[in-house]
Image (spheres, rainbow, N blue to C red):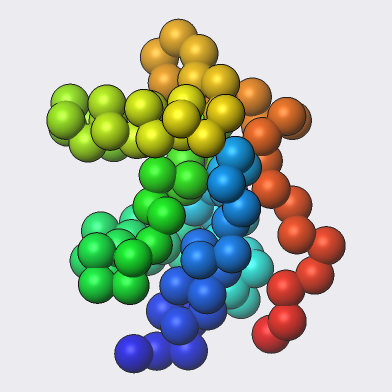
Length: 106
């Protein structure tokens, strides 16, 4: 596992209940600001194995990015169950629900 992948997993694990982070935000904290798509791949391939709260990661527009209906609905319901309000078209108010860690050790 690469150091970037390890860092991404560590960051995702720390997202608190009721908060979200974007793929790009996670990539930046992990040291590669332009690697948002790699964060998507890590989530897709390692969420189950590492028990990651994958539902707390959304796109830069504040939307649920998953296209497949079952997973989309699962993410929506998981976020709502944690108190994150999901609006029309899966939009989440980033000003209210984005988690902004002050510092994440590198």
